[in-house]
Image (cartoon, rainbow, N blue to C red; front, side, top):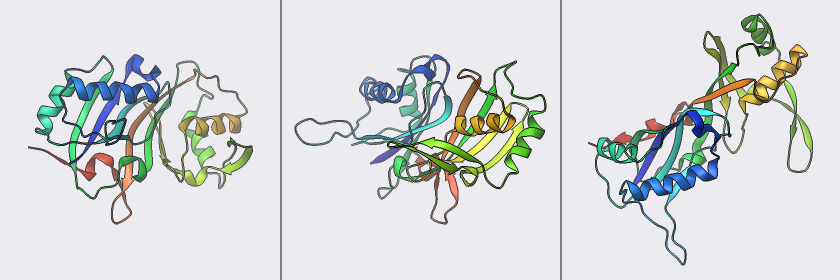
Length: 231
C-alpha cells in the first residue's frame, strides 16, 4: 500500500537540512510502529520518497513524502502515533492512502506556493505593492543563474505562475520540480536588482505553503488530494 504524508516544519527546525529530515523520519517510522516496507537485497532500507527538498532557513506548512506500508491503521490513529514522537517544530498533518498506480510525489511536483516577508526595517522600498506589481508587469525578467558548468541568462517570468502582494507578505506560486524549478529568493533578488538595491542574506522570512501536482486534466492540485483518508 502506498501512503502520502504531509507535514509542517516550523521554528528552529528550519535550520535542519533535507538529509537530516530524511533520517529523522526514518526514526519516526520505527518509533511510531509504522509497518513500513523495506527494500530487498544486502542493505534493506525503508521505502520512502520525499517530494521536493526545502531550503535551509525556510519554514513550511506543506511538505510531503511517500512511503510503502505492509499494513496500516486509520489516518487518525497513524497521525496520533507519529505526532507523539515529533520534536517541537515538526507536525504530521495528513496521512492518506494513494491508488496503487500512483506516481511518487517527487516525480509529479509541478508548482509550489510561497509567502515571502521582509524583516521589519529591511523592506527594499516604501511602496512594496505598487513597485512589485510594476516589476511583475515586465514581459521578461532575466536573471543570471548558476549551473554545474557555467552561468546562463534565464527568463524567470514564465515560471512565476501567479503573485499577490498581501498584508502578510508577497504570495508567489512558482514552477517547481525536475523540469522547471524557481526558488522564491531568486524572484526577490531580481526584484531588488530592478530597484537597484542590495538584499542581505537574512532580510527574508520565507514559508512554503503548499506543493502541487497535475491531475489527469492537467490542472494543479495539492499533493494531498491524490489520496484519501483511511477510516
